[in-house]
Image (cartoon, rainbow, N blue to C red):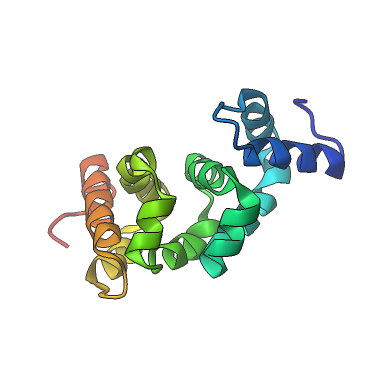
Length: 154
């Protein structure tokens, strides 16, 4: 399934990404990447569901929200920035349970791909953001400095 032609193809791909079987759905991921223009809206909707109602997302989405997070970062999908920021406002214990160690380690790179320095600065300075979210935003700012996308003196 590399050329998605129908809503059925999109739904089937999303179903495979939701899977809880402990395996990497390579075919589904390849399909998403090859058909990103069709998949961006379902990925954005998944992150928004996670931001608005994490318990509902956890019950019905399986691994989809984690794949969505990585995919929107890969494609630098700026339409998902607001959802990511809302996710970081959730309770730290919930975030820790949702993010596994791998995602926690990658979160700074995900944030550097999606957020600009001004947005990261707001997260760093906000007391409403969980401490790990603030620390990760600071790491993301460092990545932007190293890439030459942000002047550290600013």
